[in-house]
Length: 109
Image (cartoon, helix red, strand yellow):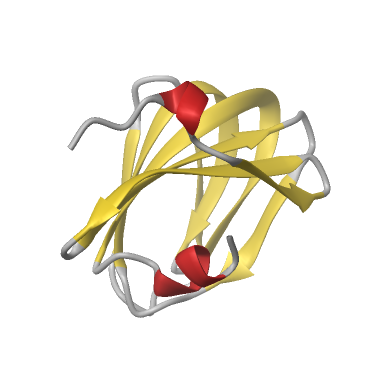
Protein backbone atom coordinates (compact mmCIF):
# COMPACT_ATOMS: atom_id res chain seq x y z
CA UNK A 1 0.00 0.00 0.00
CA UNK A 2 2.93 2.36 0.61
CA UNK A 3 5.50 2.73 -2.14
CA UNK A 4 8.70 4.57 -1.27
CA UNK A 5 10.59 6.11 -4.17
CA UNK A 6 14.00 5.06 -2.87
CA UNK A 7 12.81 1.43 -2.83
CA UNK A 8 11.87 1.43 -6.54
CA UNK A 9 14.10 0.58 -9.50
CA UNK A 10 15.13 3.01 -12.24
CA UNK A 11 15.09 1.56 -15.76
CA UNK A 12 17.31 3.25 -18.35
CA UNK A 13 15.31 3.38 -21.59
CA UNK A 14 18.19 5.00 -23.48
CA UNK A 15 18.38 8.34 -25.24
CA UNK A 16 18.16 10.31 -22.00
CA UNK A 17 14.95 8.70 -20.71
CA UNK A 18 14.50 6.72 -17.50
CA UNK A 19 11.40 5.03 -16.09
CA UNK A 20 10.47 4.16 -12.52
CA UNK A 21 7.32 2.11 -11.85
CA UNK A 22 6.04 3.68 -8.65
CA UNK A 23 2.86 1.79 -7.78
CA UNK A 24 0.63 -0.75 -9.46
CA UNK A 25 -2.10 -3.20 -8.72
CA UNK A 26 -5.59 -4.01 -9.75
CA UNK A 27 -6.30 -1.85 -12.75
CA UNK A 28 -4.03 1.17 -12.18
CA UNK A 29 -0.35 2.03 -12.41
CA UNK A 30 1.74 5.14 -11.66
CA UNK A 31 5.06 5.59 -13.48
CA UNK A 32 7.66 8.35 -13.16
CA UNK A 33 9.49 9.13 -16.42
CA UNK A 34 12.50 11.45 -16.45
CA UNK A 35 13.91 13.12 -19.57
CA UNK A 36 17.11 15.03 -20.27
CA UNK A 37 16.86 18.06 -22.56
CA UNK A 38 16.19 17.03 -26.19
CA UNK A 39 15.27 13.44 -25.23
CA UNK A 40 12.40 11.97 -27.22
CA UNK A 41 9.43 9.87 -26.22
CA UNK A 42 8.75 8.41 -29.68
CA UNK A 43 5.27 8.40 -31.18
CA UNK A 44 3.42 5.25 -30.11
CA UNK A 45 0.02 3.98 -29.03
CA UNK A 46 -1.34 1.39 -26.61
CA UNK A 47 -4.74 0.13 -25.43
CA UNK A 48 -4.45 1.85 -22.03
CA UNK A 49 -5.99 5.13 -20.93
CA UNK A 50 -3.23 7.46 -19.75
CA UNK A 51 -3.00 10.66 -17.74
CA UNK A 52 0.31 12.51 -17.72
CA UNK A 53 1.07 15.12 -15.07
CA UNK A 54 4.13 17.30 -15.72
CA UNK A 55 6.09 17.41 -12.46
CA UNK A 56 8.93 19.52 -13.88
CA UNK A 57 10.48 20.65 -17.15
CA UNK A 58 8.97 21.64 -20.47
CA UNK A 59 7.81 19.33 -23.26
CA UNK A 60 6.36 19.48 -26.76
CA UNK A 61 3.67 16.78 -26.72
CA UNK A 62 1.93 15.43 -29.79
CA UNK A 63 -1.42 13.73 -29.21
CA UNK A 64 -3.50 12.55 -32.17
CA UNK A 65 -1.55 14.81 -34.55
CA UNK A 66 -1.82 17.97 -32.42
CA UNK A 67 1.37 19.37 -30.83
CA UNK A 68 1.30 21.66 -27.80
CA UNK A 69 3.93 22.84 -25.35
CA UNK A 70 3.35 21.92 -21.70
CA UNK A 71 5.24 22.55 -18.45
CA UNK A 72 5.13 21.87 -14.70
CA UNK A 73 1.57 21.63 -13.41
CA UNK A 74 -0.03 20.76 -16.76
CA UNK A 75 -1.92 17.50 -17.33
CA UNK A 76 -2.55 15.55 -20.54
CA UNK A 77 -5.13 12.87 -21.33
CA UNK A 78 -4.48 10.12 -23.87
CA UNK A 79 -7.39 7.94 -24.91
CA UNK A 80 -6.75 4.26 -25.70
CA UNK A 81 -4.95 3.65 -29.02
CA UNK A 82 -4.34 7.37 -29.71
CA UNK A 83 -0.88 8.07 -31.16
CA UNK A 84 1.21 10.25 -28.84
CA UNK A 85 4.80 11.17 -28.02
CA UNK A 86 6.96 14.06 -26.85
CA UNK A 87 10.21 15.96 -27.15
CA UNK A 88 11.75 17.32 -23.96
CA UNK A 89 12.50 21.03 -24.35
CA UNK A 90 13.81 21.53 -20.80
CA UNK A 91 14.89 18.57 -18.61
CA UNK A 92 11.99 17.29 -16.58
CA UNK A 93 9.90 14.54 -15.08
CA UNK A 94 6.43 13.22 -15.89
CA UNK A 95 4.05 11.19 -13.75
CA UNK A 96 2.07 8.80 -15.96
CA UNK A 97 -1.01 7.01 -14.68
CA UNK A 98 -2.32 4.08 -16.70
CA UNK A 99 -5.48 2.03 -16.57
CA UNK A 100 -5.35 -0.88 -16.87
CA UNK A 101 -1.81 -1.29 -15.60
CA UNK A 102 0.98 -1.80 -18.15
CA UNK A 103 1.80 -5.48 -17.93
CA UNK A 104 4.58 -4.91 -20.50
CA UNK A 105 6.33 -2.55 -18.05
CA UNK A 106 6.11 -5.16 -15.30
CA UNK A 107 7.45 -7.93 -17.56
CA UNK A 108 10.44 -5.74 -18.56
CA UNK A 109 11.62 -5.45 -14.94
